[in-house]
Length: 299
Image (tube, rainbow, N blue to C red):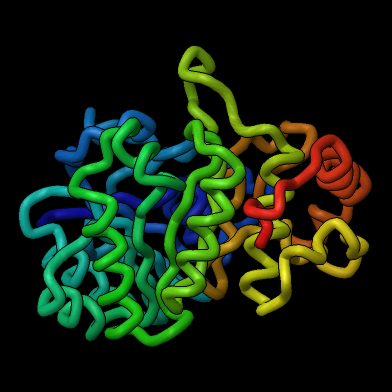
C-alpha cells in the first residue's frame, strides 16, 4: 500500500494543498485508494473517480499522514476491494488521535482486529429500506448489513456504531423513519446524508423540508425523546438537530452541497446555522404543516 486519499478540505487545513475554506473540517477525512468493486448506482468510486459525493479526494503518501494534525478525529472510509480491512488497519496505525472507520461488512474476527485501532464504526447501509437497497445495487444483502451492525454494537459498544443513511434515493418517509428507529433499537445511531449528485441529469437533492424533518426525527431518537412531539415543539429548542450528524468532531463541510446554496442540508457549525436559521425553521415547519403524518410513520 503506497498511499491513501484525503478530502481536499483536510489537505488545505493541514497545509498540504492550497485553497480557501469557508468552513474548516474538524475531522480529517481519509479514503482508501483504488477502484471500488461495488456497483452502487449513486457512487462514482466504482469508476475510480477522484470525487466522492461533492468532494475531491487527492492521493497522498502514507508518510504525509504524519503531517495531518490539528483535527479532533480521523475518519477512514473503506472501499470494497481485496483485503480492504487490512489497509484500514495500516492507515489507522499511522494516525495520532481518535479514529473512526467506515467499512463494508466483514467477519466478526476481522471486525475485532479493526476495533483494536479505532473507537467508532460507520456502517454504510445507505439505503433506507430493503427495496431501495436492491434498487441502488448495494453489494451483499440487507440482512448482512444488519448483522454487521449487530456485531458492531457487540464489539464497539452501544452508541459507538453509526449507520450511514442517504436521504433522497427514492425512499418513502415511512421507510426512512422505520430504518432510523431500527438503528437506534439495535443500539446504534444514525449519520444522515443527502443524495446530491454532481451531474444534475442524475437527479437532484431531496426536498429541504423533508430532510429537515428527518434531521429532527434523528435528533429526537438520539436524545431519547419521543419524535411524536416534533410538531408540538418549537424548533428553537432543538437547533442542534440541523448540524452535521455523525461521530464526535465530525462536521463534513459542504459534503452534500455547494457553499453558495441558499441553505445547506447539514450545517458544519452553529454560527453558519444561525445565519440561515429563519429559513431552516421555515423549511421544517412548512413540511410539517403541508401533510398529515400517519401514525405508523411517527410511532
